Amino acid sequence: MNDLKARLAGARVLVVGDAMLDRYLFGDVERISPEAPVPVVRVTREEDRLGGAANVALNVRALGPVATLITVVGDDEPARRLEALLAERAIESRLGRDPQLYTSVKLRVIGRAQQLVRVDFENKPDHEILSGMLADFELSVPACGAVIFSDYGKGGLTHISEMIERARAAGKPVLVDPKGDNYARYAGATVVTPNRAELAHVIGPWSSERQLEERVANLRRAHRLDALLLTRSEEGMSLFDEHGHQRIAAQAREVFDVTGAGDTVIATLASMIAAGVSLREAMPIANRAGAIVVGKFGTATASYEELFG
Image (cartoon, rainbow, N blue to C red):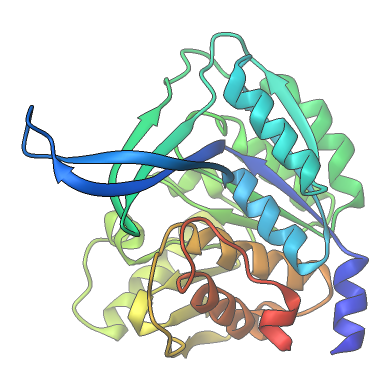
């Protein structure tokens, strides 16, 4: 394992996609508001964390590889806070700034260790916001061992098809955390990593494993996907590739919070692949990493020591 740790430390992963700031307000709940039947939270602590594609990059960094994030943010306070957090975590960032864009913020109010409400601050861009970053992408690709596209449907990946084509032409494995039902956008990717609900939205609900295998095979063939990794929550994971269907059970662990678990899975897969581990060998490691973070609060990471210690 020492050899793997060294290989991870020498690896580089490029993350492209929709970054956001996860903001938490923690407080005490002692009464119900006289204005409406809702709890009153007396805030005692605030905390900001990296979210979206930035959390993917953080999960990569936690395992050892150098992580580079390409994203577009607004020209506002959340963008400056995001940039500071990236610098604190030693994540290389190439941030495009668009004054018409609000940097995405997910504000969660927590009382008595329970999430009471989430408030989202964001706007849908009316123009392509990442086109100006294509040059940064091309400069970053040659040095990396894997590329992750983290698609949160916020408008930052309109040019994803072109970027996948360029990365694959450079011989780089491409991993996509997908959004929506248009998988033609991800054509040519090495692996896409939908959860059950996301995949059912694309291929329809399945009634048997055989039907699932047939539909995934058709999807892979239609969009030239080398593989598809289905995360199945308490049912574990399924990998569909040229060798068939490989399934592993979920790790037995208390689930506290599933926020960001998909980020951890794809970051772990990409980190292992960048370190020379095959996709089939990386899958159980990613499964273990996902099990670790759902036992933590909010967006979280799994370290090398937690995985292999």
